[in-house]
Image 1 (cartoon, rainbow, N blue to C red):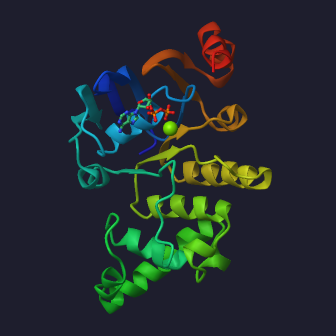
Image 2: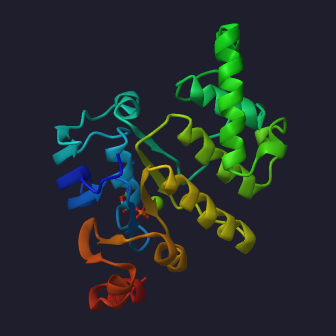
Length: 253
Ligand code: ADP
Ligand code: MG
């Protein structure tokens, strides 16, 4: 439900790697149905925060609550079961499989496992449904005509959109996008903005990690700014852009 209630709450979240304090006391609340921007200079801890939220790494300390309940940590599978899905800053596709097969594998709910076996494992009726759902997702991402193209033969932009389709296949309530515009040409950035709007209209909340401030300004109501693993500012895109600490952090890059 996109009623603006607290969906994901992080409280004093830390993730250290030896002496590196990648995330060092992050508190933020993502509300249901919102597009929440997460920005900050390179190395400020954005991807690490997402890696902890999505269960890739356990936190060093801190609390995470999803819909008011403690979020199980350290398991991608558990996070997916709780309604979280994410894309990776570096793409994670099955190059030899078609676009449609990539989505069907995700629909089957298998995370990075060896593949054709999984497809064979679908019963006939289930496979028909997965195919129909997969095509609908490709359509949402503007990839219907590429359904039969192998992932490795797609343009870089289309590969990024396919990654989003795969994340949506998990039917998340919260989708985390880690720099989805990275490396995209201008027309694809516009297409990405339209796509994120369509996803938002379906009531799915998002955390949008993004370097392009114009993309953040167009899409986000609330933005959290990290530097050195800590929140240095939070507010509307206009507010944080003018914030002295934010200006300083970005100038120092
Ligand atoms: P961002 O996504 O904001 O660019 P990251 O979360 O990738 O930042 O990185 C934050 C800091 O944590 C960096 O100093 C990075 O080198 C370090 N870091 C990230 N992941 C690891 C890891 N697996 N092992 C050691 N250090 C890491
Ligand atoms: Mg990153």
